[in-house]
Image (cartoon, protein in one colour):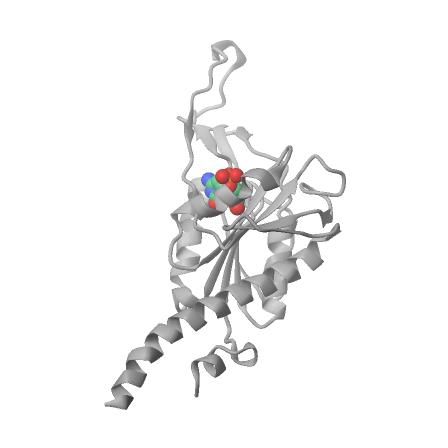
Length: 245
Ligand code: C5P
């Protein structure tokens, strides 16, 4: 069997998709937290689409009110640090890194309070100053698998996406401007562009998050296929040289 046949379209094996979804909550005290309005819909739709195409799909979910799509696995997280831990667990359970895709759709809080108060902070006792510290970057910290990121911006998201792609070693960034009607947080549609490392931009028309999820899964499969082709080319050259002897 040739390398092309091994990694050909019809023979692409079951992959593992690990997908972060939704917001994170960073608690200030037991009853207050910093968060954002991410619904988690896109991440859940990607998990659903991956499962429907026969892949293993694990969604690492922040606090969202969505049912777990049929045929997918789910790990729950509250804070960014929880999400990081659960993501690592999910990735560790995958069969092999070259057949694993990590898609970070979660709107992870970049900052958390330096200290969570053990008891509810009383109005009179609060001086109005909240010290924040940086959260870990989950997407950047993951290595050795195909990675896809999201960039939700208020303004031109496409502009900085190629740089983000390089900085986090991504296959592509799904960029969207959340201020455009029909795009981003909460709604069922999105208007995005796939931005690759080389700066190339593939603008997508307005589409449902379900349709977008299917396109992302197919592009992820293509990326894995291309990577496997490269790996098998390296693996096969010494083998052929052996044969010639
Ligand atoms: O750098 P920026 O936050 O704009 O990058 C967004 C991408 O990085 C998203 O895919 C998001 O899920 C991911 N991210 C992450 N961990 C963070 C911050 C962002 O995984 N702490």
